[in-house]
Length: 306
Image (cartoon, rainbow, N blue to C red; front, side, top):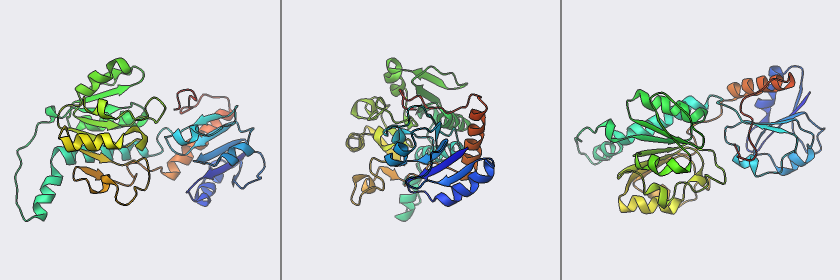
């Protein structure tokens, strides 16, 4: 069995070095143009040339949960495409979202600004019941975030394409229930995969339906958000703020409105990072299971895009 590693912007040596002992019966190499045909590929944002040179791949294993960039390429027709289920990212995502949520709910930015101005201030405590958290996307990451938010006793809602049931979570399904979900939400968390259906899903129409004083946390993809629509709703006062970790252009260009807007908190796409050891263990296990003819989790539906 031959495996090629090809990941744009990622040092190959640590991954190749860790994949070899995880799959001792396989030959594992970093891809170079003209490399021999492989059975499997472990990738992140590979160039089209790589896929064109490897038409007989049986499987393409993505080292991240998001496969939107991969779905834009011409993939080998017979290859399964597999995303990681977690890779250590779910707990990181739960940490990040809960931090952003609690920082907003407890008005910690306001206290920080007051302290910087030399003021010892007091704000009336707010009720968690007034801050229902709506999570868009109930995959592995969304489910973990929903469970984490529940521990802090916020009302939790979720919206997904297909019907799901989560104890303690008010679940909404499909386009027919989307507006009801938004109307019941004050803190909106986006954890959707980026597809043609979810592109620009956070826009004037949808964000205007949030409860007054709504707050947006985007940890999915920049393409989900229409940036100018968010800014307009923040400036009008309908939305209270936003915590944004993902953007259409990364890094954000100097002078971008998000970098200077007083109601927006920006982080550099760091809400959940792939942990190499966990990811390699998962990918190696899936390759071996697939070789044995066993079903594996995380196989991407090419029509849906995730």
